[in-house]
Length: 300
Image (cartoon, rainbow, N blue to C red; front, side):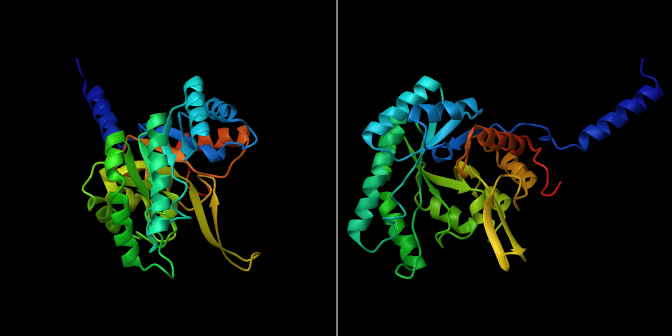
């Protein structure tokens, strides 16, 4: 039999519970991956995969590789039990898709095709591509048009290999708002072209949580890193630098909430400087705090 006292206690408890967000203390269903180049380059391919696994990472993102290295990475992935989830294309900076020179564009397309074939070999689901570069020789409009023409040439191969082309926003003076980025992706009208969203790359001119909510289901993969921009008297001016997650200006609680709101359930990859096992384990620990909504606010 419920007494008046029991009723009041139960009602009070329910009131407290209703004031706590449904996602509080809930680990987001996101796989934690490490970027291959974060692993010490004095180790063999197999040793690098093993170190990533030992440090607690669940997946890995690898760069475009020649046939021999690609096979070695596949073998290491299978032996260690660390899936390769994505390929970071390597030719899109030196040979931009937005170039006015057809030979340069074709060179970039060749590199992207290698990346797509790497992905198929490894069982990876995405290839990260930088779509274009705006510079004194390439206008914004030309970068937009040329890059879409070039990337459309890759869609048939992506469809054949069942790999997604994931375009990333980087410091290339291109796709500078979440609305434009979303529109750019939508214009391909293909499930094989989506967004690779880098949380740290937009901090100078936007809020990552806003980009996440705007891009929503377009997001295929995430890059995780932190960034700080502040006035340093000792340096005599403004200082901008990449820092470890939690040490910069990103509001990770807001990122957590935005990812929960859009229901993102893919893979996120740390993209930071390389380091030893202790460093990698600490980055993995910080990664876990982000995905659990427990990363302290800066300075706390």
